Image (cartoon, rainbow, N blue to C red; front, side, top):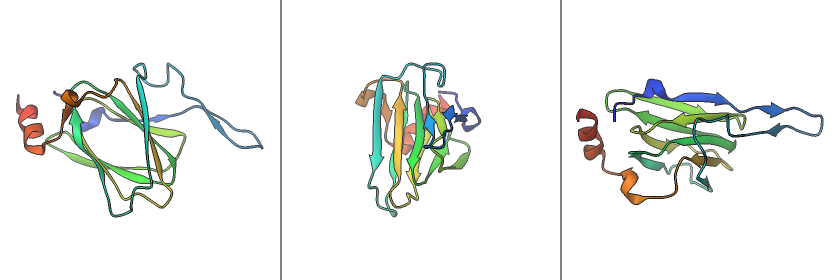
Length: 136
């Protein structure tokens, strides 16, 4: 797993503006993989965090549908904090990047578009194991 946090990308989600409100559209060319799982986080207490893992093969695209939260990305050498607070911008997290989500605002909703279905074997949940995988 040689990816680093410079590989993360903020992607603009196409939107259609209208006096009645905005419409954001995610189609097959918006992100570089087919979506196989969709899930969302909500009602996360402001002092809690989510994530705390890396994926061996799964890519994820995170969107703050409502409110805001921060994503701490870690490639084993460098850490970077990214604020997500606009529903027309998403964060693409490549494989092999440790992530933690925190500082959730009241009413925040985090939508995740994943490249694969849930597979526990794809997760690295131990930080020391993650660090060792980066040295391999």
